[in-house]
Structure formats: structure tokens, C-alpha cells
Image 1 (cartoon, one colour):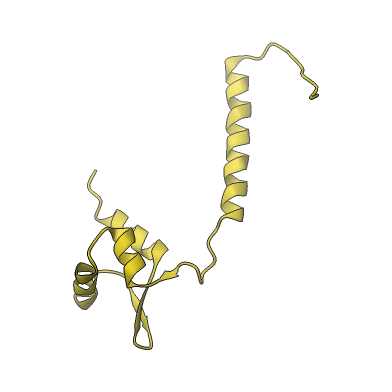
Image 2: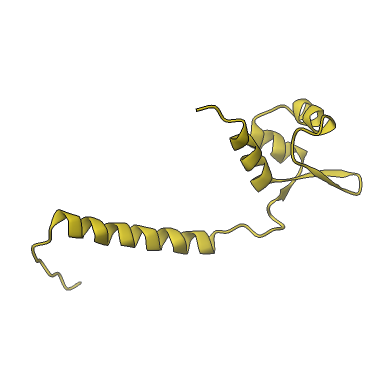
Length: 93
């Protein structure tokens, strides 16, 4: 069983300990769950799902050059990170 040490801690000290542990856990999570550059590249269907727009609307935005995209040969591609950033730009709080 784990060693348990009971000692009087002030709320501020306990809060600092918890915040430091959460910060460390988040950093470790981000390091291990960072998408690779290749997996960030998606097609029209995934772009429509991410933006919650129809594929026809995504094509229209591409034609108007209003949505971040690129072409590899004849294939239309998007970066999911760029789409998410683009969606945040037009966000109204």
C-alpha cells in the first residue's frame, strides 16, 4: 500500500501543488498527443465535418478563396489545424 502522510496544509499550498501537477500532466499530454504533420492533412469530407458545412459550401468557399486550402495535383486538401484557426477568426463572443 502507498505511504500516506497526513500533514496540515494550507489551502493555498494545496492549490499550488494541484496546479503544478495539472500543468505537468497537460504538458506531457500535449507532447505525446501532438498530431504528426501528415495526419493534419485532410480531404473535403473531413473538412466539411470539422467546419460543419456542406461539401458544396466548402467548395464554394474554396472557389472564393475564403477558406484555407491547397491542392496536391488535382486533389483538394486542407490542414485541420488551419481550419480550426480559420473558424476561430470569425467567432463572435
